[in-house]
Image (cartoon, rainbow, N blue to C red; front, top):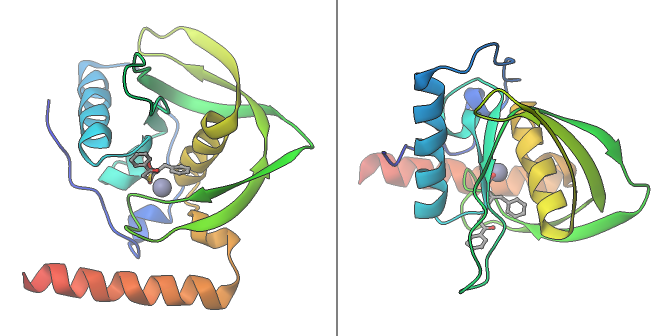
Length: 173
Ligand code: K1U
Ligand code: ZN
């Protein structure tokens, strides 16, 4: 297992739609393991492959935050939203590719998602609460979309400038 480098916005690899996965290989299983380790290390509740520079449609998530509750690491390959509620919910979202910046984003409060698991089996589940927000945020990453794309242009520009500064500082260190 390895902790992978998380790309910071702005980066063209975060804006590109990821490609569908056609085969479950040992390399893909290793990537899933490494992504889970990277997510827990960050720490975060989700991570999508483009965030670690891999343009493939795979994401990991675990929205169990309470201490003493069994973790639920999930790996979703080629996830697709097949139903979304008309009801909306607002969460203050963050992103490991946009560190220390948070904003309210409104999304469907419930979604049904289909995906392939690491055994190649088809899965389907409905998510609500933080799980629904997280899975939508991660699928957005697979489509090259960031949570700041939901914000007004001025706010998005301010956050982007902060990230450019952060990247310059990190490059100097
Ligand atoms: O995709 C990512 O960048 C991960 C992101 C997922 C996410 C957060 C909030 C709403 C929707 C999606 C994060 O995990 S940011 C970090 C975070 O939320 C967190 C960190 C430690 C404990 C609990 C949450
Ligand atoms: Zn994110």
